[in-house]
Structures are given as structure tokens and as C-alpha cells.
Amino acid sequence: NPLPTPGPFAFAYKWNRRRWWWWDRCIDYPYWERIVTTHGLNGSMMAQTFLNDADGWLTGANIFLTRKGSTGDLTVLLCETHDTGQPNIDAVIAESLPISPEYMNLWPYSTRVVFPPALLQQGKRYALAFITAGNHYLATTERNQLTSGTLFYSTDQAWFQGFGDMSRDLAFELIFAE
Image: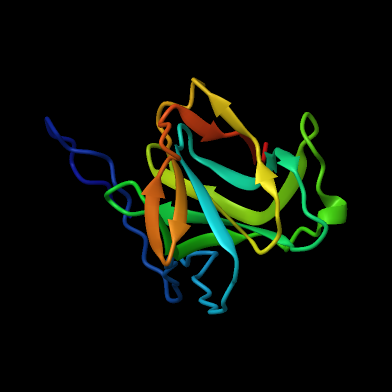
């Protein structure tokens, strides 16, 4: 097998002739796919938006309650937001299992909400939406450092900001996988 003659920009290539050969092809397949399920939830709805500051897999949240009713489960939705910053409950990323009142802890203790792992992107705004038919009260904070989020409540499928006080936000902690 002769080598080409060296020149100013020539590289030494070797010619190989084979009777059998194969060609490797790399095909990328995403390892997750969208699963769409439709069902209804009844009750009062509140939501807190937040700006995600790092890519990561969200696995849950710690929420804080100041009062809990004797009946009525609490369901938490992780959803995207509209361009206007309002929660988009038509774009739910993850849903928690219903939390019954006997598993709810009162302030200063937290109640753990578990989500299936959900990838959150850096710089994107998300919302935690709380739906319950019970008489539960979520803890709020005043003048906190969550300057990139807003507290919303919903009536008749319309979102309203705050409760007349834009300095309030819901108290929560996000739990990401390590």
C-alpha cells in the first residue's frame, strides 16, 4: 500500500482495501416522551410563580400551611406560565398525589409534596398551583427575596394577582435531585 508523496500540505494517508466492511450510524432518540392525560380537579385554586435560576430535575417541594381543614385533599400542580406571567394550567408538567389532611403539617413544619422528576430549564418561569376543596390556609411571607414571582388566585378560570398586597408570596422550598 503506497503512501502519497509528501508535499507542503500533504498528510500521510494509508489506503486499505477490504472485502468486508460495515458502517456505524449514530441515531439519537430522546429518552422521554410526552404523555398527555386529561382529568378534572375541583376546588379553590392559588398559584405562585417563580423564575428558575438553574437547570435541574425537580423532585418535590416543601410547602407550609397555617391552618388545615378536616376534609379536602390538596393537589399541587407544577405548570408553565403564559407570556404574561400568569400560570398556564393547560401546560402542566407534573402533578402531585393528593395530600390528605392527616398528612399535612402546620407552620413551622413543612409538608412534603412529591413530584415525578421534571426537568426545569434555567431562566424559565414556572408556577406551583394549589387546588383544594378543603379549608386549608397556605403560609405567606412579606417582603421576601422572591422578587421574580407573583402570588395568584383564580376565580371562574381567570387569574388575579395578589390579594391587594403585591409584597406577599407563598412560603415554599423547591427540592431538586443532586
